[in-house]
Image 1 (cartoon, rainbow, N blue to C red):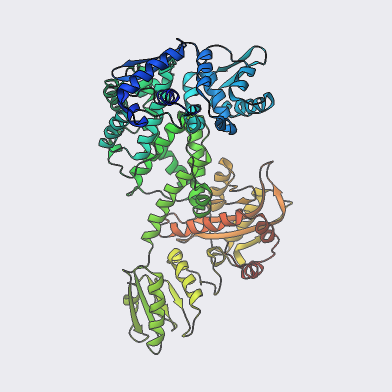
Image 2 (image 1 turned 120 degrees about the horizontal axis):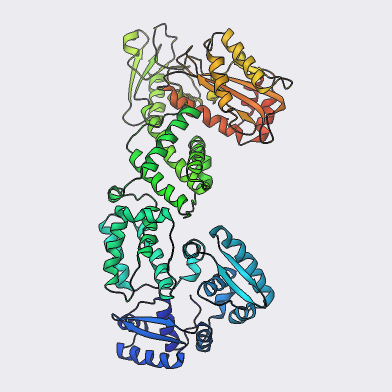
Amino acid sequence: MNIINEENRLCKILRIIEQSNLTSSQSIADKLGVSTKTVKNEIKELNRVLKGYAVIDIKKGKYVLYIIDQQNFDVVRQSLGIQDDYFNSQQNRMSYILYKLMNSNEPYLIDDLAEEMNIGKTTFIGDLKKLRNNIQKHNLKIVGKTNTGLFLEGNEVDIRMCLLQDMYGSVYKEFKIDEDIIELISKTCRKNALGSGAIDNFIKFFTVMIDRLLNDYTIKYLDDKYIELESTKTFEFVDKLLGEVEKIIPVKVPLNERIFMVLPIISMRTPINSQGIKEIEVSDETIDLVQEIITLIKSQMNITIMPGDFFDEFVYHMFFMINRVKFGIEIKNPILEDIKEKYSVAFKMAELSKCIVEDKLGKKVSKDEVGYMAMYFGVFISENSYKNKIYRVAIICGSGVLTARIISSQLKKILSPESEIDMYSSTEVNDELLNKYDLICSTYKLTCDINTPIIYMKEIFDEHQFRKQIEQVKYTQKLEVPLLQGIDSILLNLLDEEKFFVLDNNLSYKENINLMVDALGNNGYVDDGFKERLEKREDNSTMVFDKHIAIPHVVNYESDNIVLALGVFDDTLIIDKERNVKLVFLLGIPEELGENEMLLIKIYNEIISIAKDENKIKEISRLKKYKDLVLYKIKEESTF
């Protein structure tokens, strides 16, 4: 720990050996700018000053500090000088307390610890209270009383995980492993295509392991989930690497320690260069779990995760994530809030996945991990979106080429560079020609029988609105509804008067859903078996998406397009303590989604946007007809 003043050479040498308890005389000499002979003489003097309370010995050319009497050794250290400003930080004080307790076999008196840090008893009690609270998640306890002393209660693995995840920066800030050891580890890991993050983490684990071994604290017991790691290829790699390290350090690494050192590799973030991880065996548990996740997302959201370029990488991510959750290794996601905002549908998919992982492992999955899963789902969605890009566009004008050229220039700003844009007069087009295009922009009312999406335009048009229409067509493709002029919402373009319902709070949730389905069936929007399928689905799990929003949905055999209806409760319908529904988005999903899948994702996106704003939910729930919803949207500057 970084608590020694650098006033004299003896102090500097002791500090270097403490912080890098496997260092050579040459390394010390280089740091101090003196000869190795001077270093050897100073260490002789240090051993005299230490009075047998600690001994600096040399093994295989490396200096090692052995502490025999911790309490008296601390007194000697203090006589050499202590950095007063170190203890100005509460984090450093808590780290010091924990470090002292984990390296002591006897209870430590509160007064002694407070005196060592030169702080008042009140400050110490405050630090101790916070420390006790912080280490609970690692299954550690500080027990004891003022007059009898304090001691740390917990197993060795939990102590190390606490050090690695919460205290490493303050405890090991200047604890340096000798450069030749670092180089050996780094070179071997790089040779096996491990990334810099995995290497740094491995060195952290190694640092903690060596520190604990040198203080005579070994891992005496490991449960089955650790023992299983011994039969993996990753263990073979770690075992071989530590065998090489043992040749240059005066320490033998026991089997349990070798198993412990597998953790930083099997729990790493998936590296950019994924070739090296191909040697890491993905467990059957991971493969089964990924398949369950794909099935659940398909079942709950009708979104298909197709194996693609990123799929293998996702499987490895899940393997590493499962290990992090299983072995209690935390990671931080610095862009979590941005992910939730930018990838709202993907985040919902990740939250569904989280439930499966927690159920399988019996452990909680952090929001940070959910965020990283969402990033992968965001990639899958983007891959599918790419397939829906518009590549061929026909521009048709009744008269004059100038308008066609203006439309063409706008399209070039919106579409990908490889898109083809052709211009025709109204007399040049026919069914066969136009059906070859992905999009038609026309100032002329077409009478052809075509399936291609059409945007009808005036010769003078709103460029901003035109851009929005293009974006909508990317999602709607063959959607057989007119796009509402000036309305930038897929939901509103799917809804109409026949699909908007004011629901009855005096009826049950199920009765209200049945009323919506009956009306849709009478108007030919859903097939005869739709209600029965929906009831079975609801019996298994009420599809309340959010505490105020429900999204009941099943396959609809009546249409090849998505059917959407909206039901509103002016007064909240209470389902249970956690859920009180105000909006119901009822979806009929085609048996084969195809191009409609991206439209479905867009729908979810808008619904999630509504779910985030309780005022918006309240205002929409008070509307009485579809036209009110359109007027409300027009008044809103933002989309759903």
